[in-house]
Length: 341
Ligand SMILES: [Zn+2]
Image (cartoon, rainbow, N blue to C red; front, side):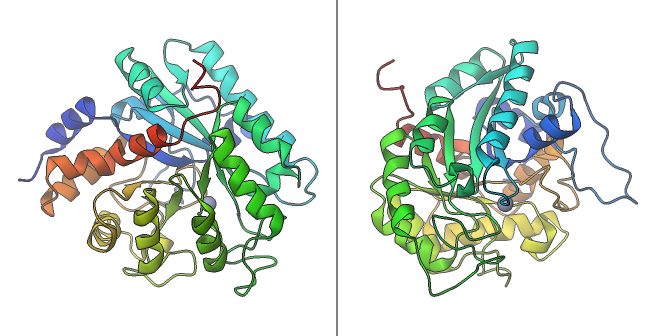
């Protein structure tokens, strides 16, 4: 049963659509990007690298919740925590200005409540463990601000481990002792461990330690496209065993194609290999990636639901891909302070 665009958009209204990764907060902090304003899509002749997400277009796309991912330049390491705080502050300012539009959320219950109140749910994650600046206490400090995931690595080696590629990459090295402590501390503080960008050895080290579901917030899969950034079938099965989820990135170079069908291919491969409890959305919008044709911005998201339905994905599985699997992980990893509430 294939859906029309309007039917797909109506489905988004009924379920909870959640995206695991957009870099919009950096634009808000550094460029004064106004999340509440509708921004035009870039002209087709210009590279569509950012400006993909704002409140009007989140609504248009039927998105219930957006994870804002806070990334930092890794050198000097001092200043990374400040940069994350600045991005959190930029989001806080947007929420203070538009309290009926945007709500800070950490739990599945809070996401559901925000949607019921007509608000877009904002969630926060960190991209790159250099944000801890080598201090284990920083995990709790970020958790207290409501940060919900920590991407252990980004594009360079840090005190936690080694990246899949970039400065300090070393396929033979796994998590450091500090990195192991960070995984345990994340679980204690209700911060979900994000395994995007980490090398394969560190990936399995982290999952071996994990007692709670982890995630890969934004990635492609090697089973569809050979790229150093993507993860293999064994990694997908390990996430399934862990109870976690994997967000598929909307970036042409990692998908291996400019077609929206490539996003479908990556999602269906995850289902084939690891089951339908694993796939999720991890757009990487506003992350200087070029999205496929038909997914130019977050408002276009129903096109993906249409494409999935055309390939035979039933509504029950659409709901899981669009956000159900992320909600399950949020519910399974209690947020800091949520148990006392
Ligand atoms: Zn990334």
